[in-house]
Image (cartoon, rainbow, N blue to C red; front, side):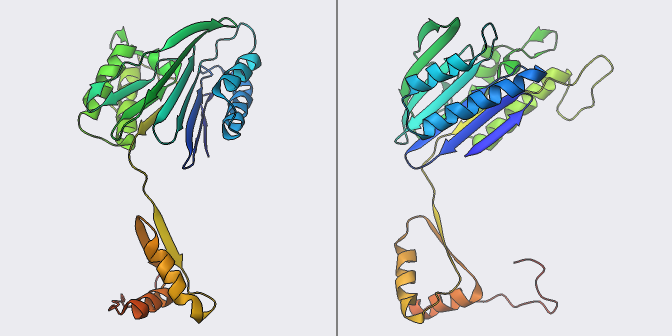
Length: 272
């Protein structure tokens, strides 16, 4: 599980082979709201991990919101690797791009407890790009104009045409917001007439096949199980790694393979 709290926004993500979810709750940069939204995000995450229905999670979060307070939140849940369920409460819409083209999701809107709720179910494909931003990102102003949803969508479409990964998409969105908020280029010092941008949150995602790596670290305690351990390693899918010179020598002996060892420096290795 991953937890990020910044600028009074809270992002929680969780991933297993059966489920992925992301909860993004925005405090809109209001200092004392951080104390209120963190427990809301935590409770939502706990319910999702328990396998509770998404409808129950929404009801719990709405009940926890103080009356009259505007606290946007988004939940993205993915089951079986491709079946996505999206819920947005007073929040900016999810950005999604497939093969360099924007995907406009068909959502169902309803009002509940004075909040606008949007829900959607859709299928993900390998190579899809997605982004969830806090409301502060949408409200950014610079260059004598306001940065709107359409501007962000066009920017994401252009970025994903390059087949970037999630980190590259995130970096580009941060750079765009930084330039907009400072009225200049990324990395420049603000001029006397500009202020530092308000902290915002961005969750960038890229859909790809699962990758696995299995590590065999250290020789077995009993020599008679060495072959069994090696067979288990070979049967594993994805990358297979042997850690340690003694363990590597065992594997080479059993496989009848030649082992090349890097010579140890005279003063030894500072790090392994």
